[in-house]
Amino acid sequence: MSVGIDEISFYTSGQYLDLKTLAEHQGIDSNKYYDGIGQEKMAMAAVDEDVVTLAANAALPIVERVGRDSIAAVLFATETGIDQSKAAGVYVHRLLELNSNCRVVELKQACYSATAAIQMACALVARQPARPILVIASDVARYDLDSPGEATQGCGAVAMLISANPRVLAIDPEVGNHTEDVMDFWRPNYRTNALVDGKYSTKIYLKSLKRSWENFREQSSVDYADIDYFCYHLPFGKMAQKAHSQLARVNKSGQTAEQLEQQIEPTLQYNRLIGNSYTASMYIGLCSLLENSSENLAGKRVGLFSYGSGCVAEFFTGQIQADYAEALNADRHQALLRERTELSYDEYIKLYHYPNPTDGGEHILAEQTQGAFRLAAICDHKREYVAR
Ligand code: HMG
Image (tube, rainbow, N blue to C red; front, side):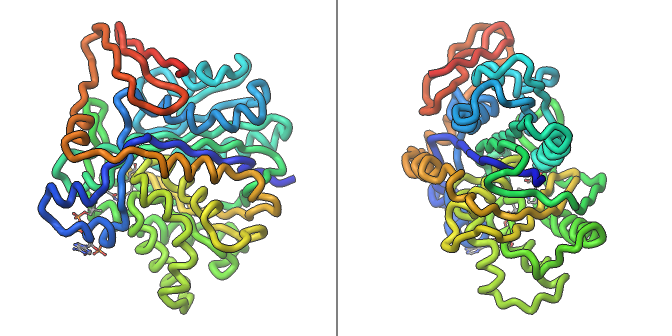
């Protein structure tokens, strides 16, 4: 019996800032963003969107297909949670009307925790193959204005059904890990924006890739040459290019720049338009590969490198299944990205500064989202979510 991803669905906000607009405001060459960091647009959450609404929207098509009673657990990965105590997944559980016997928990380790959730889900499904698990990764990436990180903001959620004999990706059990206590990116409880040592974070990312790969090779007989495509955690597109060149160098692959690019380019297309969505980023990259590759991927092996600052990293592999194309949500994803609204610089700043009320008063939020669920109000310190 194989275990892995049976269906994958993502959601992002309906509004974005073009990085050309940001570059124009900053008086710099927009190629720094388009080419230098490999990003075109960044999704900006509406005032009535957060990790809960993004997550519920991502998971809705899966739940509608498999039925509300068949999901045994929701594992919710995020690093931009909205409560120190209550799991964001509990709100999603209600919005999706899941069975009350469904277990719900939230996991955190920067951008890595969705991968931990998937590995835990695989282990649970291996014990009880008839009980699929919904893994959701959802984040809103925010950095200070005028900081180097500003152009790498974004938001999005991805939902994945983990089941026995999956239709999309069978996940191999062998993994390689690297954990190290470093301060490359962090967000103390009293801050809404992350703090980051940008250049150092890219160095630690690359070091963690090398260490995870070495550990993976100790555990697995799968070698570099056995892997057809590589999905890297995507804080920005250019990071994948840096990572893949390094891995090829470590393995003395002798590939040309064009061959290296072919192994990652299809994974970058959606993220280039969305920006960083932390826990969801690498899995939106996987979706991009599955939905944008020009070749039939059945039987292809994918290497996945998950990185969460702080840091925990993991390299693992999976094999794309014969009928994967029938399980995709490509039309919905592409329509979602096509139909978004572009923000002016002033609209972006207004949205960025939209107040996050903390006084316990009654705050009704403007209706902006086009999604099926919204955060309607925050009253008496309670978040009120509704279906639209
Ligand atoms: P920066 O320092 O402003 O950028 O921000 P830069 O000056 O280094 O330029 C970036 C690249 O653009 C350079 O290329 C320039 O040469 C090029 P590189 O040397 O890197 O190959 N460039 C141009 N190219 C074409 N035309 C031009 C032009 N001008 C310059 N005109 C930085 C970059 C990544 C530091 C910043 O965006 C940042 O701090 N981002 C946030 C941190 C981050 O994303 N780190 C990634 C690793 S950590 C991670 O992935 C975890 C994370 O997702 C969080 C989590 O785990 O929870 C962040």
